[in-house]
Image (cartoon, rainbow, N blue to C red; front, side):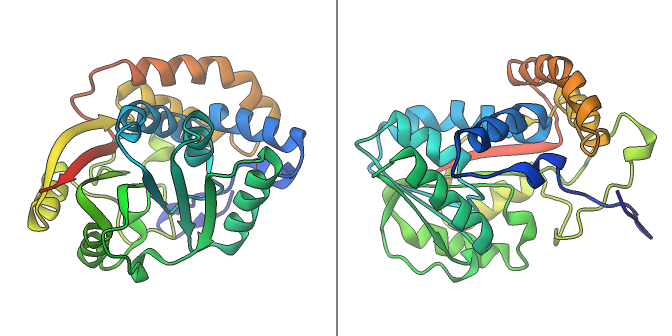
Length: 262
């Protein structure tokens, strides 16, 4: 793990080097990685819980900043009568996502290389969601305007982002630097004001990565470069993640908001 003037830099998980998304072993490693890396697992649980009932009311769903498609693959498997699209600016991630779709034989899911700052759709989607993408964007207001324009009447937008106020348990984690982030995150009030600007009514808001979740995240981050230690900590990390998931967090390092077009 490298250091920088501002502190510790974010680094990739060691499992990235072993993934082959066109094989059963690659899918197994991915499933383990989701559960072993606390931050991802907490977001995964929260998104699945929030959006599963919403998707039942929708026909056309877009994931902005989809990565290798974990959320969409699960949704597409559960809802074969719905159409799902994922976009990401990273060509390698999209290639891997499409390999997974082909391997799993999903006909209702596709992935494309597209910059969310250039989305140009008119009343196309019933649901648009994005997980930890807006903190990478310079002009967030423009992106939200584009997402709103891409919504069908009464459509939904769900966003998960880091909280601007990050709390740490361990002192060595106090200066984590995500070098590809434009900003640390957002406040709840800042997000609500942004959505109100575009006539998006906030239906639900919640904090993720509360006390237990943030503790799990720090454990998994500290040992993400050590396979043996990371695997040995998985049971503890899993317990902490589920404790966070079932807690009513009054604060947290992550924010999840569901809105509807008015």
